[in-house]
Image (cartoon, rainbow, N blue to C red; front, side, top):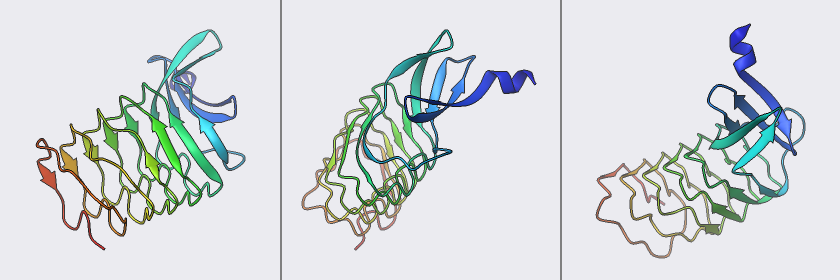
Length: 178
């Protein structure tokens, strides 16, 4: 059908994407073959079949349970990191890039026990429920534009210090529960 031609799922340079042809946008999706591992650099854009696509999202569950994933560089144009995008990535140590990310979904980094470095900061407005729950090694600053911190966002995460920005207007229940 016409709709099927406008949205395609393709593997390009080792990463699976949902391509939205009309918008010229790509969303990173869960691999249909193997589990992602090692260090991943997601490009900000790529050229495929005559079209330049901009990567705008890390989709829901895109890297979920990729236990051997060690680092990821989020593309500069990504606005969203979806629900459970990296949940259960127990070997994930570092997340960098993502200068324009505004939303981190529920459980996005839940149970990333080795996650130490999280450098997405400046544009972030929402951290979803349990987004960083059980991240036992995490060190991060609360972004200056953050407005909403979801329920149990940092539950069982051993943050040593935290600065709360003035613009934070909603901290849900048990955001920092042990």
